[in-house]
Image 1 (spheres, rainbow, N blue to C red):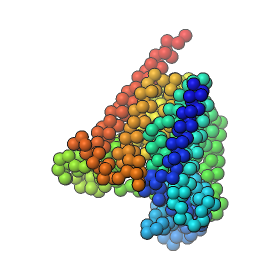
Image 2 (image 1 turned 60 degrees about the horizontal axis):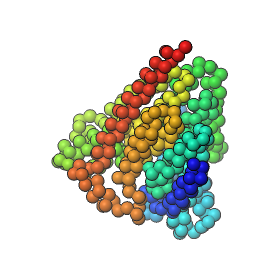
Image 3 (image 1 turned 90 degrees about the vertical axis):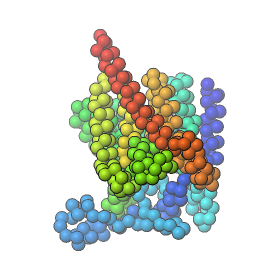
Length: 454
């Protein structure tokens, strides 16, 4: 198994190296612009003006400074790249990666003309994170199981498509998320808290780890552990935010987290409940069997008469509360409940929340290998979550720019008469229902075993 495993690891590495210079989605151009801006002009003002400027603006507006800062719109730094301009709306942890990628590229080509090389530089950090994830997974089990877990991630077609073929950055926050789950399973809650904070400052989906972490902290009942965890989280935040607060630009950096929530589409290319709802709204407005597309919040309101985002937020709140309740009922010794809770939370969010994107179930695929060897349904869940992520990515972007034409993808999606993305969204709905049932059944079985134990 060891020799075969090494060959398979080598095969996965070859695919990743070949994918480094690919063009990915259009987001790759946005990330290259941010990398260039950060590497050439520094990180401090990449989000916006200094703290002193913002405080002065708040004072000019009248009233108390802190409440005014909490609600007033902050001016955003715009980054020009060719004929386009974008404001940075990724958290500070991601910007550290983009800054490093920009510095690497500039060390190899200061002219900025070797665009494939720039693609490779931006794709390199998430590929290195993929290597780290495979290594971490291999350290979680003995014998052949370590190879199964590592290769379940390393050779996963959905992960390979996301990173680096389509150029997504999810393995960066996924590495912190995976290590946080492992730390929770081993009882290291202060370390887990620091890793959850780090994951959230790299990508906002890190917040999906918070419900599980809070349940575990409450269940300890030890104020000393909770206190150390809070301090560890603050230390992690201070370390990642240091390039901004040390230079007096902390408020603008924190504002980046607020910008991410300003979505006008109810489901931006995520095949979920709101993609289905948007399709129904299209059907009503445009006629039978339309080609599915993103539907704006106002457009849906005009057809349905009610606000999709408000309902979505209520649904995700109820679903999260249910997941927290389920986890709190597990016996403390059943550590399998921790990755199950995170995996379920990721898919509840991806199915029910507004503003979800096509890559937002990547964390579930990264965490799922932890269930191999310890949960009977692990293989089925790993295959199903991976298949959904792959289909959502592929039907959205194919193999990326300059490889797959969007017209070809549009024709492919219409092959079945109904848009294939709608069928995948229905599959997602079924997957989440089945996953919830399986988790509840496992909870019941664990509680029965505990009741029968001497």
